[in-house]
Length: 277
Image (cartoon, rainbow, N blue to C red; front, side, top):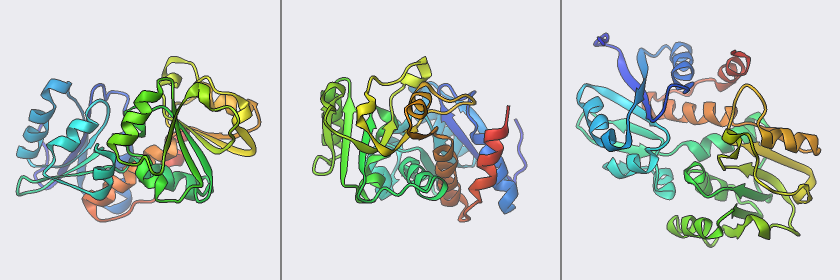
């Protein structure tokens, strides 16, 4: 595939990536801000990831978004890391320097915090927050959430040892409590974040509405054209709820700013995504 030599090359690398909305999002950002870029889907299997990044860079690529299952590998391949990437030990954004140096960043948590605070008018300071799940989806969230000074931050997982292991690895045990899903009774939370893959399988985490306050907000990192089982359940039981469309767009805007030095307007992009068939 030939490209205009004046067009800077970007892409999203994952496996699979056919479903990704990133080309649409970054295409709108580029038109908004008058940036001459190309953005491609790059489906790369785990065994080929490092060589694929090097090849993309050698061919003049300027930057990559990284999605499942490569975020930890992206952190490891980089020569330098932002503080956010260091805190998550994973990366969703790579900046490919002309000198061959690779800078890793993680914009996931910033995207979530911005969506909650700016788009959904939900501030995290002094709130009791529950994160469901201890997999790769939540790695980038802990540092930015902790920075907002919540009153309490709990990570609950079906296997609590996995939550403890992640918290210890990221060195945040001073700020985050790890528990099993069956150990949550007696607590209530202002914000419940579903970081599990349950929605992808048409189910929801087995938690009780007894965890709700009168003002609980439920946020699913998953997203789709239809409400997820988790957001459906939350709304049916009187909670506000949102899928992760806003986080997707806001983390992309952070990546775009890192690459191009200009902040795009996220609201029109989010509105377009929600209207798309």
